[in-house]
Length: 187
Image: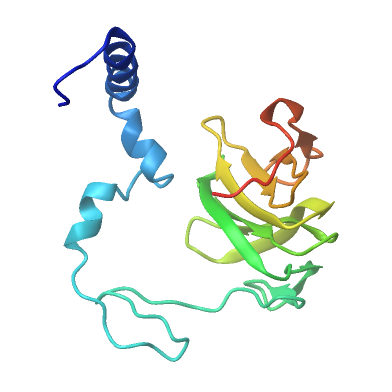
């Protein structure tokens, strides 16, 4: 603590501390969108193994699989190909719990003038059942984040970048969030 602590500094520090304390158990949910994986458990995963055939270094008991390739239709569990071609330059992403026990992965596309965001929807057992766009024809979508109410914010990393709130199910059209400003958004 500094030798001098003025009123403004005290109020600023107290306000920040109160904000964190008032979150209580919701802090876990903010760190991990998957309720079964708490950030406190990550330290217990063990050492990483040598790279697997996909080049992934995972702890014992974990496995990886290739789900989508940029520019290619996404292969689904039943052998069919989705109509959606997975976007180029995948960037910021998040996982969400679906309404029916499924889960959805969202990902930005950090490509100029034809960016956006896409989603992969998985059944409860982890089978990939759908792939679709949730935002199209935006510019260099890099940063983003999940909202507490279950939507995805996709942000453009350009000098006049915008923020869009996206429906993770791809049903509703993405909404421009003008109040979040027009500047280079980066995580």
